Length: 324
Image (cartoon, rainbow, N blue to C red; front, side):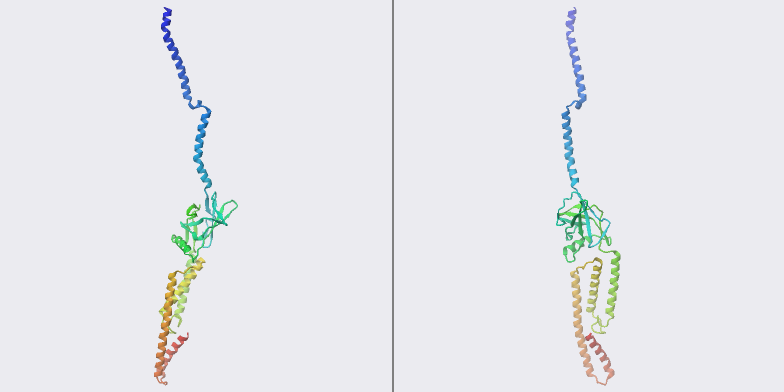
């Protein structure tokens, strides 16, 4: 009976033992799964980390490299007010890689308010004690150069706020403005407001005094001495004085012997030709009137002092005008 019971219970006992074994294995596997990568081999973790670090370094490296190569430029005297003929100095720091040949920065031009000042030319280049490159641009204008006059005309035409102008400044490398200067603006003035107004007032006073003196003269603007005023002579004197005083005024304010426009020269030529024509016509008229007065004197008796006196006075005035 006992044996029969054991034989009958053998299958359940085996089943129970197998279930216990599977339960133990399941617990061990669950613990291993919960620990995850902590039980992974050390070598595999290092390789993964190294791969991530390499990727991060690859992304950061160009930015670091560009930061090292990026150059900065700024005005040496940012608060100074520059005028024509002054030298603007720009300090370039960092890895600029600008070529310097014969003490000049090759291919570098000054750009003021988006106008490339090619006529100024390449700057002189020197180094300071810190190893920075100092570029020196001389603000020059050649009145005889069409390119120079055109660049300055284009630049100054952009300013409408008075005599003190402000220009955004850039350094052009090659054909593009690639290196902005780290400053607000370049302060520039052709002349001061006080000097300009003083020159204008002085010019008007001198013009008025000289022209009034010519009017008061008995023969300067007249066809002949004490005669009528000549339109040709008056025009020639008016435009001649105006151009000369304007020329001198520009020279006093800028220090430049300015180019006289062709239109002004044509105007002077026309007034001069008119004045010369008036002289020729006046001389012919004067000669004809002298001949007429002489004929009148011949027709009068020598003892007719009343009739002869006004004619003789007029003839004397005409002859005096011919000698002046």
